[in-house]
Image 1 (cartoon, rainbow, N blue to C red):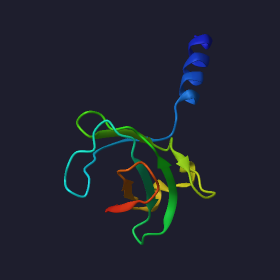
Image 2 (tube, rainbow, N blue to C red; image 1 turned 60 degrees about the vertical axis):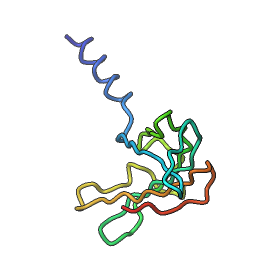
Image 3 (cartoon, one colour; image 1 turned 90 degrees about the horizontal axis):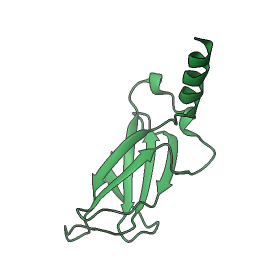
Image 4 (tube, rainbow, N blue to C red; image 1 turned 180 degrees about the horizontal axis):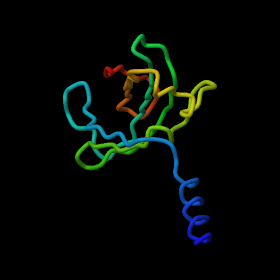
Length: 111
């Protein structure tokens, strides 16, 4: 019984904080950006647009232009961590910015 508890505790500690995000990427002409590395910046804010956490990713889209990332596992910018987000404070918004050419010249796609 004690061994099972220890193993389940270790498994719980191995889990990462974060959640999945998926999007379809299109260029300025509305064409799919498929099989390409893209720049992605995600910012978690409160309802007044105060930044709680920000991170960047450079995922590769699939043949349908779809990217998949785990928010919380990207390259954090600044000195804030995902664990600093106060989820109980009320609404938490996510701003999505993307550079379909894979760099860091992001276009704001909205919250």
